[in-house]
Image (cartoon, rainbow, N blue to C red; front, side, top):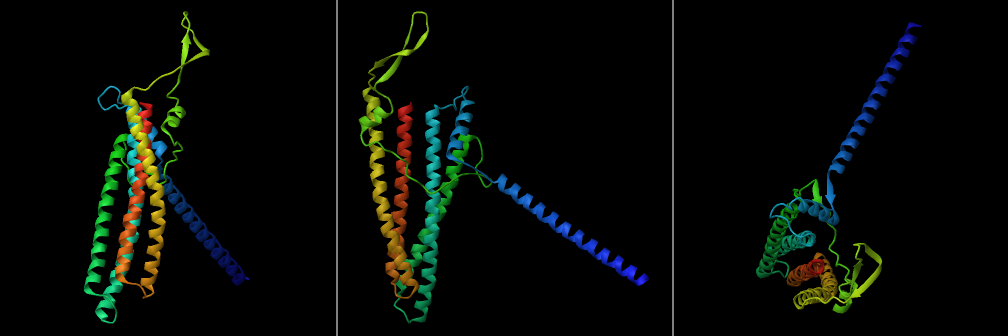
Length: 304
């Protein structure tokens, strides 16, 4: 009877220890989840619109000193630095992809050259190494430029942009600019004619009576706007052309990389495909940046 009682106590004791262990595991998992959630929440990012609002708020506090700038100028600067960072982040990703292809090609070409069984010359191997070196140099430059852009942007919002407090960056997208003529743009922006409210002798503003007053831009302002408008339209044309060229060079690169991986490609052709893709895609991204900044500058001139 005593043995049965002791066995029962032993079972209960083991069961209690098991339940305690399970409880500790659950508690530990919950704590880890909470910590991860806190880390995720702390790693916030700031969108372009939020950056504009923060910069305008900080700028408004500088009205009493020489640091104050017109709101439209602040908005333009924020967009300019944001588009710069957005473009260079994508260019950096592309450069890293090209770097990986060059590294793989150099290793494979060196094996073929050392074995003496393939059709790879010392000149071919040297070209691939130079291509890799140039790509690594581009990566260093882009990482530096991105940091400088973040410093400039952070100065406008009076915050330091770094890990845990960074900007929201997506793939660069050309801004929508539907205007095909300068006159159409002016009309859409209500630059002419301009409505004028009538004030009675008693000083009461009439919201019902409006007189259409034909307002003409000064010759200087009209010329500035027209130049900015032409800058946007020409940039838009370059983006469309660059998009087509990007698709062509991308297809060429994929083909050359696949051929070289299968051992039927030529190192010289792969080198040329990598260089061409880097130039064309980087140029395409630059054209998007130019378009977006040109549109922002036109908006600044329109609002000023």
